[in-house]
Amino acid sequence: MPASLPAESGESGGVRSVQRAFDILSLLTEERRTLTIREVVEETGLAKTTALRLLQTLEHMGLLWSTPKGYAAGPALWRWAHLARSAWELPPETVQLMRELGARQRETVNLYVLRDVHRVCIAQQEGPQPLRHVVRVGEELPLWAGASSKILLKDASERLLARVARSSPYGESHTATLREWIDQSARDGYAAGHGEREPGLSAVAVPVTSGSGATVAALTLSGPTVRFGDDRVAEFAADLREVAKRMSERGFDHPLA
Image 1 (cartoon, one colour):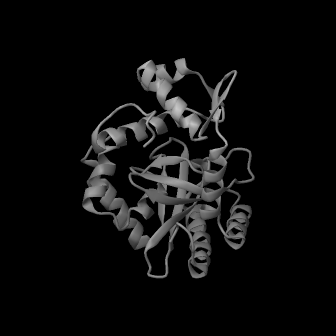
Image 2 (image 1 turned 90 degrees about the horizontal axis):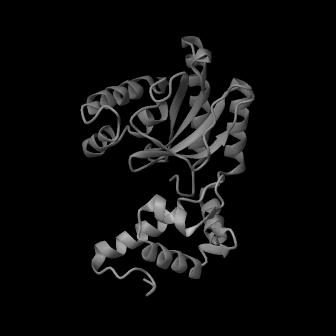
């Protein structure tokens, strides 16, 4: 670890320094392109000297770039972005399948994968209707509710389910509800959710599987609850299953596997 990092001994200190560095990088958003030292100190709670040393180290590594307005994303992030894109970018055939599904059903199509106690959106095709559901690609959403969560948690251990439940507004007692949802979805071959996380929002999800049959992703259609009546849910589920089958048959050769 660079000598300019805060002097912290032991493995826990090293991990703490890495976490603090990423906490700083995470403050950058599309709405906030630069950071001042004052903003970093106020939002991370770090001492000014510690924040300054971390900022200087990140700049030295090319992860940040000093400008007259503050620290901006650095050029080294281009390499990471390229690596991430090449690893996670879906094959053109899969993108086309999602695009056609969204055009047929006129709702937003998303593809989620499991990451610890979150689900991450790795691909999206927005629906064509003015009132639609949109999630940013790369965004992490909780696993304690939602149609895609019920699919992704199918093979989850009791320990993971308990952690997911503890992250919910309902506490660890939510574990039993999660198990009921997962079992129901396994029997039906799809999952549906209505207003569980956001009132007025519904979704239907099915699994995308690997060659061994393990669930590697959840393919979903989502939109306003008023457009997700029982008949439409059944239609969405049938179309999703067919598209997911074609995706599964094609296989994945990157981090989805």
